[in-house]
Length: 193
Image 1 (cartoon, rainbow, N blue to C red):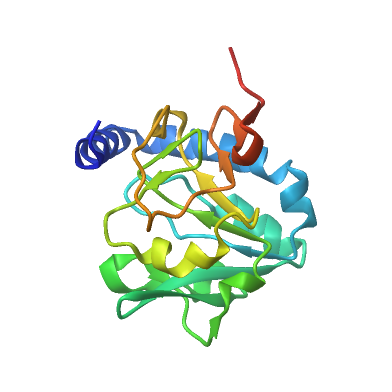
Image 2 (cartoon, rainbow, N blue to C red; image 1 turned 45 degrees about the vertical axis):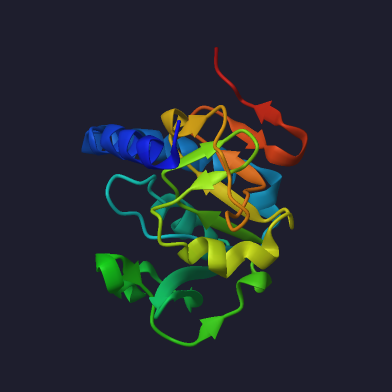
């Protein structure tokens, strides 16, 4: 399926989720993520502020802050995505595209142990379809294959195959509301029948 068609179909399905579905599926996903050794061992975690029925991240943010982890959030700066430290979610204010962003000095995303990336669709090889602007691809391309790029998505956003392009950033770990996929060795954990 062409990227454009898959993007439109998946976004339409995500828009059809009720607030209750978003909250409950997001909580299941976040709890699954927080049970992973990668989360427990991470000292610095980058998250995104969800919009348009994306998987919520607040439970992870609160747990990370409570555990004394450093928390980063992205901010759009021109054509680039920068990451900035956040000490509380109240420090996020609407930025470009209406997405909550932090203020303050940029922090190199290479300092993060885990970077949670939103997207429209992902495949079992870690390929991602974003919104088409390329912000995450440009910001994270040099970290590809480092074991720290994590996708959060609903199970229906995970498809068998996406035709990737050279500039597309590949995820290392995909967490859905049903399972965890470790991309490098294609292991699925917690898959429900």
